[in-house]
Length: 127
Image: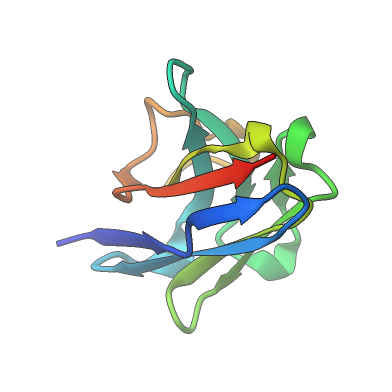
């Protein structure tokens, strides 16, 4: 059984930082592109960062609104993907979801085509 479990969300003031983790089990982690999506109330789920199966290859994707503030990384030995979020803004408030995709490169992940989802973790940034 495949499981993706996010942690690290919470309430933070604007300008603060959070580090999200997504622990996986039941899948060949090092064969999957991993991504982080987020969904704010009444908005569509959007891809914000993704990383190729082999982080040494250096292939990552970032949505423009999070570039220079967020960093995605992975530890294939621990089957975990991380999202370091710095300089957080109120508009970053959303539920953040971890996702795994066997076929697509980082920039091509979409909400309708990923293979597996985590349950989501709430991030709230106060002004």
